[in-house]
Length: 400
Image 1 (cartoon, rainbow, N blue to C red):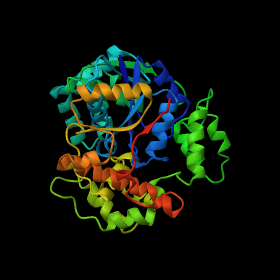
Image 2: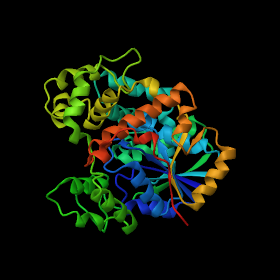
Image 3: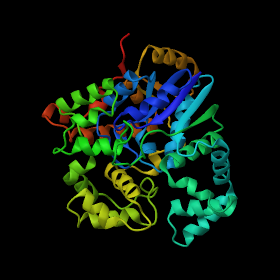
């Protein structure tokens, strides 16, 4: 039996240990790389975050490629489900935390969202100028009953439903395992019960006026040790807001949306970003200039990141074309030996292997390399800031 868990571990904290410990059989984590879904750089390098996950109980950590990470919930979930299915391992389960661990209700919403009738209701709402998220809620209210759409208001419920939709649409051979989410709210700035959100921990780590000693109490010691060392070595914290000049230069010099469009662009939003980039003096100011009631900050951040990378819809095929290994323990090594026989996508344990694949795979890898190089510019010291590390680093293995 194998349990898959999708997470960003940005950074790894005490709340992440519960689903890993609750996993049935071996545990595979599908983790964002050096970009994260909120449209930012990860605070620490993916190698450190993957190492923390393995030291805290995960058996194998594989990477969710950047084009699926810098996306809305639907492609994010689809990419993760597809990677887990592509391992070809038997008796797969997908565990996910949510605020409503009611499988019957979650399934009903997921099934409804996959129907043309509900999609038509959502489109009708959007034609009135309603933002997509609210349009989905209203469409569900009309399809299933007043009030049911509120289930989409919380981020973990939203992802849970997208995982269920992806499992159904891909006919993925796995069993969903929803669990009631523990700890504090996703974006809470107030610790409670020995837990703190990743949002709160990032704010403490990034604020030079804060005493970082209080950060480590909310992490397993083995994870805290890794991240303390990253900070000592100057490898963090990272964030797009530390690269204002770089990002604004890339956006000011960006071309109008190509024929296939920038990834997740619509209604001229990329042109609005290009126009406002000439006026803004920072990434934060740019987001405020672009923001409207229709477009929330995370979507704007993702699109401006995609534009900076030159990433278009061509960079995101329906499912990820390879499985890239980040870290493993002995059990994980055993899974890799099985995957050598069962996987339906190439398993990448050395960067050079991607060079031997097709154009599509190399395009995605080049984007991943660009993200890693941007993150490196946030680090301290010339050695830390050199580019090209994506093509040199190999997976981390826990020695027995």
